[in-house]
Image (cartoon, rainbow, N blue to C red; front, top):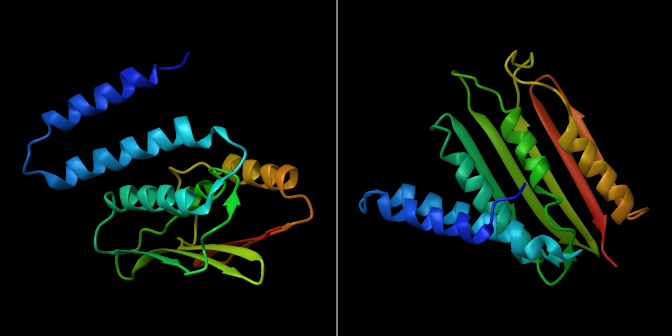
Length: 183
């Protein structure tokens, strides 16, 4: 069963009005969340989406994740100037960033980090996500790998022979690199 989007957005607007007017952070976060839902419900029905829209969604997602972290977490996003003017499959990148936040370390003595980099060079779109990690996976986290498996399968179906996905899982960090050869 699906929730009627009209009801959902009206409910979000009602919650927005209930939030104390001086709590601008909460109001802004709710607006970002609303924009993300709208993107998923309406914009992602096409087989491809402008990279600019996908990047905006990704930035909103990262900003919402940052609300849950303190100063011990360094989150950086670097977007090259050439990341524009092409389309990709919608919601292809966010599972990789979700995994980075899911598996980020929780060190108290050193910085924990998630770094995201997007580039376009010589007809290839490059997307890199790195995160610090604990030596041992936390007991509370499950390692289902469904998100990564879905990304791999989508890449095989939608970009056959036109992509490379690599993952480097060391003792202190995880790095995932995706290259898509644009036609």
